[in-house]
Amino acid sequence: MKNNKAGDMQNYLDICIASQQLTVYAGGSEVQSYPVSTAKNGAGELMGSECTPTGWHKIRAKIGADQPLNAVYIGRRATGEVYSVDLGKQHPQRDWILTRILWLGGLEPGKNRYGKVDTAWRYIYIHGCPDELMNGDPESHGCIRMKNADVLDLFNRIEAGVKVYIHE
Image (cartoon, rainbow, N blue to C red; front, side):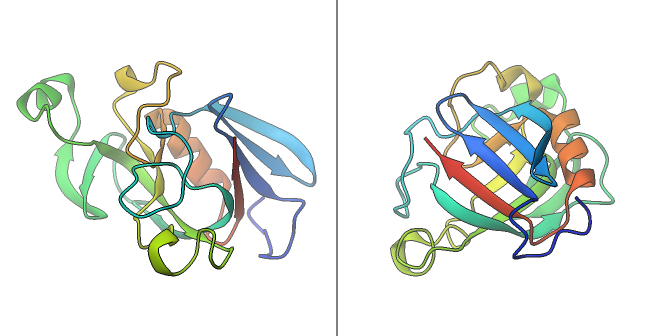
């Protein structure tokens, strides 16, 4: 999957909101699947909706390659903190973004790109979260949350530019 060409539809990520699953396809075949948590508010593209955007996207940036497992990010920058249950208790209101960030950019003008529906401008990511929050339910604020070991594995499997299809 590392040699993905932007136009190569044999290699892509499929995110199913209904089943809360992310599936990696390489060479047209399923190679890996992970549980995810999408938005508590369901599917939708509008800025401020806290919904998970649907349609075709691409990984516009991979962030955090040199960071440890459970590294904490704010504004796409590592804070130097490493998440623990105790740190979580100290900051109960944080929307934790951990380990790695795969920043999504929409590919469909008027649906998930440009204006009030732009996925990148909404800062929608695939990212790690506290593993204890991964219970099979949609509970994010729009992003696609993953267990930390899973997002690290995914990060190492793909390159920036890979296509991502998000659907109900």
